[in-house]
Image (cartoon, rainbow, N blue to C red; front, side, top):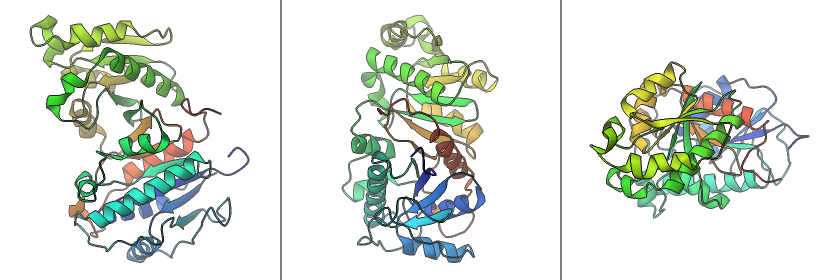
Length: 335
């Protein structure tokens, strides 16, 4: 890719949600230089959305025909045999199967170096279940497609960065899912990500699992038996670790510049405060993959489908981050 203009692939996600709308809005609004933007999905869906937004149809492109799109924005339909019925606001198995096929094609293209990065519009987990697809989210699907066992979710907006030690699992399963090795690996992956993102420092706060970080064992022992020992096993001289810290105060501290990233123990511990302050600009970056993948930090928003009111700001930020990272060495991609 070094002698070619980087191609950023943007999958349409669940077409019955706001994915096509925010994808189209983003590629027209975000005038990035030095990249090509390719919408990946049903070209008929893209044409319909373009008409709705009073835009001209996008030219088609296929990597089988040329290695480089000739236009700044194009559409690639890797599965012309798949054309799900458009049912705005409905959660359908057909739309989810199509979204799965487009992500699979995008991942394959990224692994081959055809595209430099992937930005994924939202999918719906219930829809995946209806389609018989056993993935709780894009993160787990892309990990399987790229053959990696260790991966993480980082949510970021400017210098507000959070990483999850566990992801899409029930709350009751979180304590049993935490291990010393798992927490240590998450911390070290966070440090690698900070370097990739160009952070000057690597000050990482590690959340406790329990209220008040366990209060010395009065409200739980995971801090003493799992989290603190995991922190002691981190052998990174370039990282300053603090913790376990209470989750009810650390996110205010990172907003005021005390840390460069926070490692949280479970999904809502991090995402509730993050989305409260950074919903419009938040980006999800998958760590540990040999490809670059970003996404907006929200879901399909079925209630907004076909209304033209969806905010594409998060998707624009995801495209901009993907384009920036495409110009830097990926710490998890071997030459």
